[in-house]
Amino acid sequence: MTRRSAMAGAPATEGFPTPGDQVVDVAYLSRAGWGADESLRCGPDGAEHYPEAYFPVQALTVHHTVTANDDPDPAATMRAIYAFHTLTQDFGDVGYHLLIDRFGTVHEGRWSGADGIPVFGGPAGPVPRMGNAAHVGGFNAGNIGIAFLGDLTATAPTPAARQAMVTVLAALARATGIDPLAQVTYVNPLSGATAQVPAISGHRDRLPTQCPGDACYSILPALRADVAALVHR
Image (cartoon, rainbow, N blue to C red; front, side, top):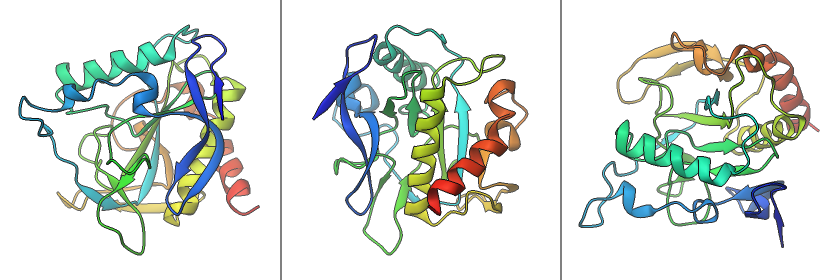
């Protein structure tokens, strides 16, 4: 079963897949759904420029993309972000794991494997492991990045986008055992760099940046509370 974004017309599946065969009730577009050209992240021989590495999840980080707020075609914006991150910034792929448009549709970001489950992959184990991405310099491994599509400097997320973020964060927290209201000591498993941050944090909690925008950062405490209520419901 599918539904379509009100403006762009892109088909979205009725569910966001998570580990353990759980499907979350939110509109979702896979990479194929928004038109990712998979050759961009690979060399002429088909090998990935940055082969995936997988780590246990320690934290969840919220971002904004500083793109248009009244975006008529989020799928096209996804393709533009993908090209910019991959070809210009040399991130190897989309820097974020997931991105949410103003209609509340969740878009798969960085490639994490061929199993159809976004964000996660790698060897099977007692807890799911996330594919490493490129959204907080020096603090990526073990840190899932979810971005609002738009500029939230002075404009809050739409109600649909906010609800989708709460739903997705709750699903990720359940899958990984993260307490949405906790403070965590994040430890980069590659470099040893540490950061004391909320389990659900904003980009600026780790680095000097305006991300995820003042209008988004100010609602993070309420967002965490809503996520916790959904997790424990």
